[in-house]
Amino acid sequence: MKQTNKLKMIAAMAISVLSFTITGCSSDDFFGLEEMDDTSLGQNDILNPREQTSIASSQEYVNYITAFYEFLNEALDIDTTKMDILTIMKGKPVYYKINSISFSFVSSKMKELNKAYPKFFTYDYSQQKYIEDLSLSQDKTLGNLASKVRQMPKRTKGINPEDAFSWCISQGYPNPSPGVFKHNKKGLTMKLGTAAYCMDQAISHTVSNGVEFGGYSWYDGSGIWITDDNATEHSMHFPHVYSTPYPQYDFHVHPNILCDKTPSDEDWDTWENSVISNHIIFDRNGQCVTYYW
Image 1 (tube, rainbow, N blue to C red):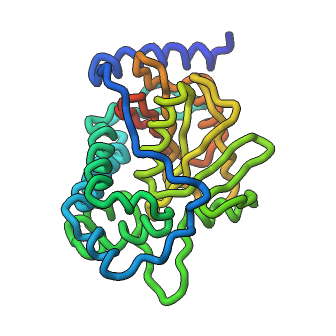
Image 2: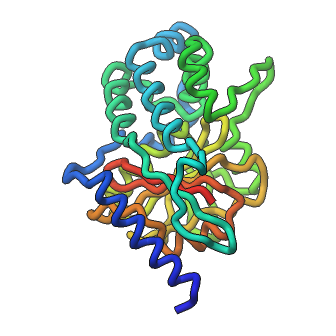
């Protein structure tokens, strides 16, 4: 066994014990929203202003978007003076933090929103994101909360393509249907959405299928969630990031019933070759650990 593998194994044992002790693991499965039908993505009518405003200003939507950015502000609060060092890799410290806010709280607010506005989650990703931007621009408190971890879009008369969409295009991935991209050589399918929706889908699909799902998210609040045809309960492939705009963070879900959020050897290998510094690992209940390297 190489020295790097010894370091990984020791680090894994440390974080596994800490994570299980502090966050625990409930017996309840994580249930997310139903996946949007791929054939309907981008096919919905353009939302009328009254409908946009009604959803964006509703208490259910405000509760949901507040919960998401409270979660994200916790998960992406990268202050190394308040984080622990997991190990040293390639001469650099790997920091980690066990987050106190679970994504399951965000999911519960998504369900309440879905009950009040069942049509919302049938809208394509650009329409969902437009409503999110509208809500943040209308509510100064929400806008300030979101601005801590994202960049608000510059509104012009032209089209502002989402960073997730722009990245998929710049990487040269085929676009077989609206909002869906393929990496045919790797057997990867990338589906666009808001960052919150992508996380919800990754967690719920991991719970349902017993293998890893994950994704990327960008500074503008857009994201992708990834299906890997060759994923296992211990690993999944991520598309290599070689073009801009670079994602703000990556995330993936470990399906094991022990709720272990320890990086696997495959995780380390992916991170070693990544331009991204922020990594979030979820367990099946939405609890997560943030790694910064």
